[in-house]
Length: 228
Length: 228
DNA sequence: CGCGGAATTGATAATTCTCAATCAATGTGG
DNA sequence: CCACATTGATTGAGAATTATCAATTCCGCG
Image (spheres, rainbow over the protein chains, first blue to last red):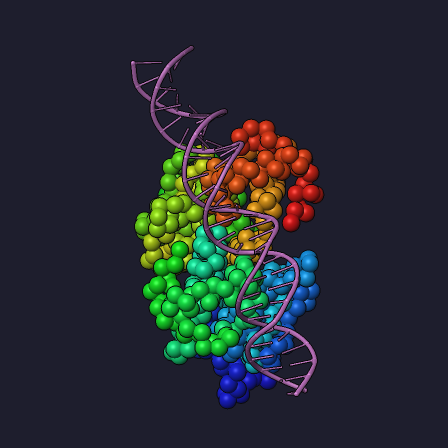
């Protein structure tokens, strides 16, 4: 019944993910038995709006975009789930449906725990609940930050922040944008055309370098931060 | 040492507040012993940026606005704490400073629990931690919703939503906006002038009625919801 | 090699901001 | 209780940013 020790994906789930950090070894083993994992190829859906939302979904490796569909059929980007990020909705509210979509942007490994198991886990492992509270708190800060930016800063400034965030934590000088311009646009609250123009503007001002369509190099991060 | 049974404010704290709901009677009594309470008059500050953030702050009665100060000295509204709402920052992250201000908008009663006590409470009362996770989850949903609106909808639409939210849950036909136009403006990501004009526009279209400067009446909530 | 989605570019329109002036409301001290 | 000061709200006119619509162009892929 138990997972094998060489089941790397299951290990990733409990090791990589912040909400499972600082847990006692026993608890980690418990978690491992409750977790199932799935693989998604680029473009496949982790879940869709209307699906029953009955489990916590954690990205063990890869990237997935989470977006909503508005009444007129337009996509609204919510966020990109990176390795270690999770989608909370399902685990938090009882018997709800997903109101958003999640789609893999590359080959992606996902861990899942059913809401029931997860709630029990929190009851039995307060450490775990505290971790969860911290993770949610961090997400709230992010969202408040993002809200402030959207209501305050110009598109050029928001785009600059986005480039800095996206490139952060990468060793590589040159980085690839995971999203299409259309998605970046709805994420930043603007249009693909404006993204195009502003990227060109930033390049002309010597702050970034366009390598290809979706590959860029940051040339002057200080100046990017100062925009607006 | 224990609180008296007639200490209404302390009771309010544990009874009104969602994160203390569904707790066993014993736990409620524990909570009551850990809580201190304070009263603030209109305009007084609950905390300021730079203050040590070492306790969870819960509004037992009244209203307070939470805002940040940008580099150039402009206020950016973050949210209005209503009765039962809390400011999490302090309780969640260790030894941090407040990066925002909270100011009472009317006579306001506040309950406080030190972070230390609150963390211990979560460890010992998993129910409590689960409540907290739920509360934070709800806040995340709100913020995501708000984000989507700001990036998607016109000012007129956002203002309409704001009016509907603000008036919701009030029996009274006529309601008073708790915030000054300046604050509503930064909250919605626009300017006081635009707020003024859009309110006039909504009134001209017969969707709302201006009673006075900050008193309004919703005439056609259906149409308000449909804007944009 | 050519098809098709994505990106770019251009021209124009719409929304919202900014700045400035005026007006209203609120509170204060004599 | 009134004149004055102060702060907030409104209105107008012009400017700026960004959206929209349309036309190419680019690029990956079968």
